[in-house]
Length: 284
Image: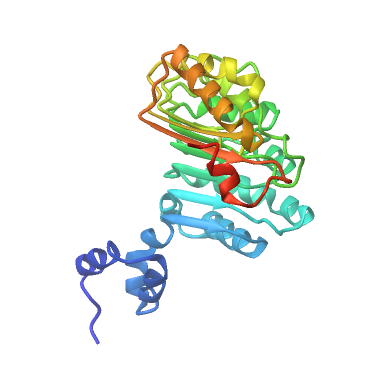
């Protein structure tokens, strides 16, 4: 059986999902070589073995492989800290070689992130970053160098306390000048929104506390462009729901913040009745 022409193989890969691409790569060595860029374009690493294998391929494989990955996510939720520590040199070296990387997710403990960015010099220019924020000179320098980041998702330290790795204080004026989308808690929003062209704001699962309602609208109004999409998370007893939501809306209106899309996630106390009718009566 003669191999398919390269242009036909490339056309086929544009309509394939990852599992289908993996099947195609088994047809022949030539076919595998053609679709290798598509196989490595989006990479998710969920355990020690996959991280080790991927980093080894980037470091010791053929040079062209380094330009394939565009989106890489490190998400080893169950890997021991000791094993992750051993992988730090490999992760650091691999990140420094992937010159086409634009989207990076680091679902790693803060201790590991600090080790990765200690004296690190990545060659890529990110557009999206998702990770905990760590107080370290190397990580701060990395953020300052990544001036093209448009989306930042701040997550908590995956092995630490819930409030660890979520804050940024006294940011440099030159930090993230092109930031358009930010997902973070109130304190980080308060630090990063002013003067940046933010269009999309999300608090993720971080709860906006009632004392911050007064200043929330004022914080958002400091974006250098109008907020187009806003997602907030609030927690209160059902009987306070109407007043709390009105308070939030008033804060936005008073500060001329009028998002085209507004999403509010409600988190009720543990002892709240499971009967939806108890909540519905306060929504109408």
